[in-house]
Amino acid sequence: MLKSIQWKLVLMYLLVILVAMQVIGFYFIQRVNTHFINSFQEKVSGQLLVLADVLPAYLSENEQKKNLQNDIGFLADSFANAAGAEINIINNQQILIATSGNKNYLEQKSLRPEVTRALLGNEAETIKVDPTDGQRYLYISIPVKVGTQVLGAVYCVASLSSVYQTIHDITVIFYTGTVIAVLLTAGLIILLSRTITNPIVEITKKAGAMARGDFDQAVTVRSDDEIGQLAEMFNTLRVRLREAQTENKQEQDKLEAILQHMSDGVVAIDREGTIILANPAGAKMLSGESVEELLQRPLDSAINFGEEGNTDLLLTTVSEFTLEGPSGRIVQAYSVPFRGQSSEERGAVVVLRDVTEEENEDRARRDFVANVSHEIRTPLTTIKSYIEALEDGAIESPDHAKRFLSVIHGETERMTRMVSDLLQLSRLDSNREQLRIGPHVLRELVQNACYRFSMHLQGQDVSLSFEVPANLIVSVDADKLDQVFDNLISNAIKYTPDGGRVRVRAHRPSGKYVLVQVIDTGMGIPKQELPLIFDRFYRVDKARSRAMGGTGLGLSIAKQIIELHGGQIQIDSEEGQGTTVSFTLPVATGGA
Image (tube, rainbow, N blue to C red; front, top):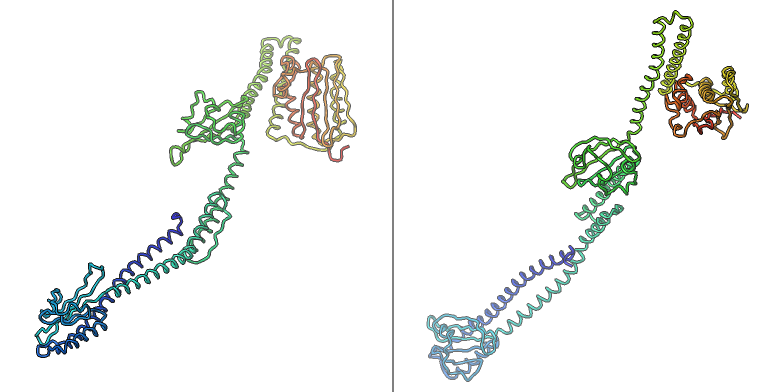
């Protein structure tokens, strides 16, 4: 119960009140006790002084007569009733001559010290406790004088029981009132303390709800005092915290969105080398697993550092190294250590980037340069050899000279075609090749291409035909599409033996595209060679292709032209069974 501030306030105020009441009560009782005792003493002393002024006439030697004894006794009784005490009259011989008390003590000598002091001319006053009954009594003795002569003494014995009973009654009344006042004050304090503690309790409950994440809490402001100001500050704090939480949540959502959708992988580790954060791209690059499976695993289990370094190196220095990820992917890693406010918060962030495509492109560029160099060196070597032969005297022989010049002419044309194809590939790669797109009847384009090869086929036993509906209208660049047909039909004829057949077919499988196929019954392509068939300078049979004058660039050019038109191209082939090259072209608006 004392843990509550309300009861602490009640107890504190009650203690203050009790201490104050005790101090007041002690002072009050002391003052009441002194007042009543002094009043009683003054009352008794006053009566005794009056009696002492009357007695000289009765105690003088010439006036002491027996007929006065009764008068003195009457005076003692009268003043005893007035003073409420026992009065004794003693002569200068210490003989009790009158008393309002026990008459048996008359004519006896009194030896009390108070009487002795009075007969010596001094007043005596004292309070004593009677051992027989335990009551307090007031003893007063006053000398009876005539001038300086002491004639006797008046001795009084007064019980203080009535005075102390009155003091006791007053004390009881005071403390009863004190208890009642304390009880009423306690109730009032409880009610008043609630005006302080209830807002604090409310603020405490609201703060607990805020600590659990509920910021839709508001405290009612009931006053303009410090409690009210605290409530206002709490409401202001609630608004600020909710705004801060909203901002933090937005920033967190942004960060999560960035991490979730960025192509680069991000992995964070703690000082033990355990993965504490990863995005899907990082998990895929490291292990091919999900993020949940990767978390709480040692980074060493996901990365094979080899001689590149270890986890401790990542935590101390900025590092950059290359790894081989799952499925043979090449991953470039860049790590940056970070430190928190304590050593336990130390860790590192590792950024992973898949550079497989870049490596492949670099490799392709190197291969391309090597292939171009090889393809150009071969005809140049041939040309140089024949020129040297002519210079050595072959030019003198018309037959040899004519044959050598024919070879030189053929190699020169081959180099010209290669350079032309390379320039066209360069324009296509750099998007500098402008297409003149327009609607064209596909049958006319195919027919013109086939007619161009009719003379060439006169010396071969290979048939060429086309099956294209007359209502197919495509949106293409006619010159570029002629080049595609020239490359595809030329290849089909080259690799089709005598007695074979080459066909060009087209139909419309959907509302947006036309499918065109160049089909031959030639030697076909091995399946393992099909994924590489569109690579530049790639030949299935290199010796035969070079002998037939091919550059190895025709299919690459055809592929890029088709893709510039928004279509796709693919090759289906089986060795010894022929080849089918299929590609799509966009239908012109209004085409059938």
